[in-house]
Image 1 (cartoon, rainbow, N blue to C red):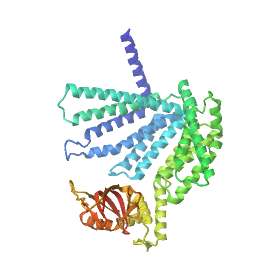
Image 2 (cartoon, rainbow, N blue to C red):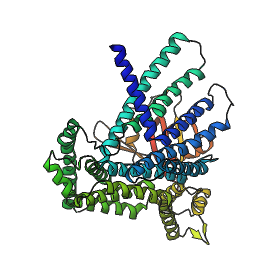
Image 3 (cartoon, rainbow, N blue to C red):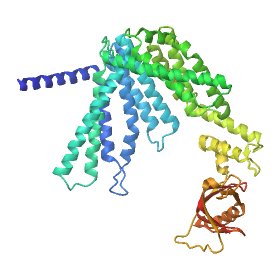
Image 4 (tube, helix red, strand yellow):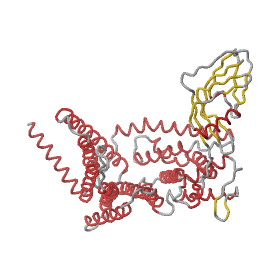
Length: 541
């Protein structure tokens, strides 16, 4: 009987494998190619135990992997596309479309020693667009929310892959510990890497495809999962909205707008709404939740107003960065999800919008790399012009610039990079920075000090030195001792210019003997001295 059950299970697994190959033949092919590429990368990787050995094929395979993965995603997406829009010779469409993207990505990545930000962002944008299109098509094909089925497939794939990986590395570890105990480091390391490749590249991708519902299958979260989301996580989410409303009230009451404080929390709130809308839009268990989705747009209006105003203030002050620009795009997607829910449309429209935006802001001139760079370059030009640092297109330096302005110019130029802008390259080539130098000093070990003629000893550390360079100490009788360290700091700078890091010198006046155990000072180009760290004691006559 047991043998019969095992036989039935084997036949069922065999049938599942045949079904996977029948439904996703092109994707299975690209998965096999990806597995072989991964195996080649593992076998040809630079050997840490053999210095100087390197294979050019390793570099080629590493740059081939993004193209193969993109082809796999394309094959899956077009298989879902033909589920929704049946066409003749669909297999040819799957193969041709995935091959085209493979060739394009392989050409873009081939021979690139250091991938540019444009290449990385463009590839990631294609991946995102394919994922959102697959989600859109999955929902259209099944006439039910597609996000729950996609999350289930991803969770099943990841969980089983982790378990398989842990089991494989346990077996591998036992083999090398018990059977072969004298192998060199490369071989055991290779077997561990192959365990990960089998678990994630072999089983994981196949399990993900196998867990996707077939055409017409209406997958929904189990009742227990729905209850968990509705009765546990949804109240916590409402608590977050309450906190945001209290923050809005605090801003209105105080009459001032803190900058850069609210954006992340409001973005998390929008992401949470999109998640609930994508997973539970069709639920009928909790009427309050359905009303929340319906009127979420109006509920979010005060929060969105404050968030958008705060982002605008940051933009006015510091221009666009890639992170800020991406946050603005995601906020727009969240607002679109609120509008779709308000109009009682299906979540699939949000996925289609997200796919289009992913392509626009990764492959067009509006991409998340170029637009922030142009914004920062315009900001750099404005600051240089306002401070008369541009003459006939050339950057000049002035010694009377405020420290804050110098730091701002240097930060912008470093963000842009010398390869992205000739103006930033000029600033960097001119060493346009604050010209701060740091000097570190330490006390001699086992140094002996005579206390003859002194009556008091008071220890001190960094917090006793103010920004003006005065060492301030409190005596037992309540009187305050103020010692000007400026002459000593200047002497240390001159000493440090010659020696950088050396035993520290003692500092003696008519009344005080100051012994430093250690000190770190920062010297600015304007002659300012900042005590970064200091510790020691003062002897008072």
